[in-house]
Image 1 (tube, rainbow, N blue to C red):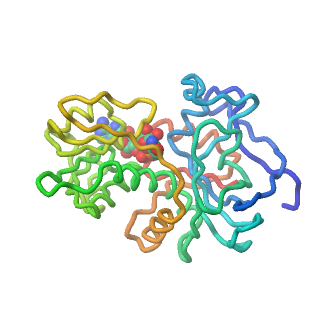
Image 2: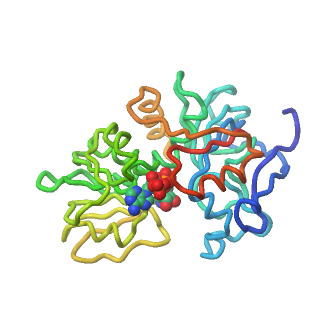
Image 3: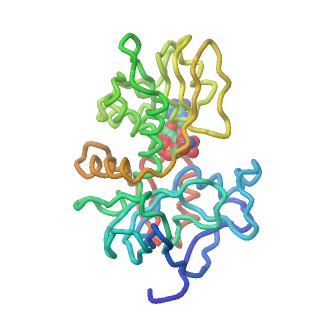
Length: 305
Ligand SMILES: NC(=O)c1ccc[n+]([C@@H]2O[C@H](COP(=O)([O-])OP(=O)(O)OC[C@H]3O[C@@H](n4cnc5c(N)ncnc54)[C@H](OP(=O)(O)O)[C@@H]3O)[C@@H](O)[C@H]2O)c1
């Protein structure tokens, strides 16, 4: 680059895919504990579609005077380091930036982030695949933290949306914590869900010890939990009310460099699935958003800034 600015995709007046603009913004130098990353890949996640259409502005979760950044996770290469960082320039890293209300995002050529929030991408894992891990992999492990270890006398876990990004990771990781997993997904997803080691259904009956609601079925998901069981949702702004003695929690994904490192290692080894649908230049961001909005996409559209 060698430039004092970089390109990034933002919304100024949110109104869906066509309101996304690519603009030049000034380069930022990393402070203590921070690194600047040249982003190679940034996935399009469902939350980004909500940001672009103004959903979270309307809810009062975003209040940016000029522009709102898009994108939560990324993979790329360290290009500059602040004091107290022992990552060398050239190191391949992945990470997550969280929180809605920000004027920057990962749909960008460059990003300054805390080194503690990043993980080194293992050799043999490409950056496009690595970029799809942080948001949804960390959401899954943090969802499982909320659920806890399975009780010996009631370990039947239903994962809704088990072919999706969050649901797929939950289905793959929940057995580590003693859960016996059944994945609820579309009929065409049976092979993928069984390939994660889970049982499969397209039509779950009520009575599960716990439900991990990767499909965001909300109250319909809660209705599938037995009396006194557990439910963990994925929509922090819409936590279903508890009923029938059910413990209700909602995950809020947050950065965790060390655990991200573990998820990347398990992706590199093939133990966790790679979730890339297609990759495309940053300039095709509106196309990627429109395609994702149609539903039925398995794996992520990944932007290459
Ligand atoms: N709170 C957090 O920190 C956090 C973090 C990450 C994601 N999330 C949220 O978690 C949700 C899932 O995200 P994601 O990236 O995993 O989305 P995704 O990849 O689109 O996965 C959702 C899956 O659920 C399936 N599905 C929807 N309704 C279904 C139904 N009735 N029966 C069976 N399957 C159904 C979808 O299938 P079709 O495509 O065929 O509809 C899709 O496979 C989103 O709401 C996202 O915003 C929250």
